[in-house]
Image (cartoon, rainbow, N blue to C red; front, side, top):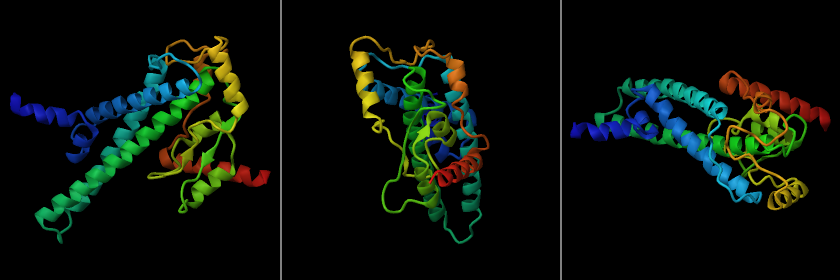
Length: 259
């Protein structure tokens, strides 16, 4: 039994699952869900603290937990397919020695772990900010244009340049596009909510004076609209990356018309 403990510990992590070609997609889903929830809570605490709230943000709302769980499942299933396909390709290469083949598998593991961790971190940060803005009643997710997409570095791709050209976006539009424009994307949405300093200042004052309550992750939200209606308007584009690309083209077309 003692000899099994390291295997059990490895199976409970995303890196362990990926290193072993995802032997248990349910275990991978659980690991991704834990990491995604942790990132969501950390980001929620950072953002509410930046708005003057001294409480503790902790996700307890079942409806949001269910949403994060569904996303973790989608990530796990997609990762299982890509990892197994890539490992099969490595195994089929006749030009590699056993040592080289092992090195290629480890290279794949590190690449996929980093890619997953970056995506989970971006998801947690982006979703926490959008949810707090919407469920605290600070902005109208369908009308208020408070989300700005930024380009980082000199090698930004045409996709991300096109998204930035459509700034600013409503929360509904931003959540449809998601936190990442494509895999391994370094660009993303501004996390400090800096474009509207007046709104930030007013919010901090209201929170400090007890006039405004921020959503803290609980089942009940302080906003005037029901949580289900708000959350219903904040959905990711269906169809995976292909669906996201479809929405990106739509946003770029709309931006071109406004210019």
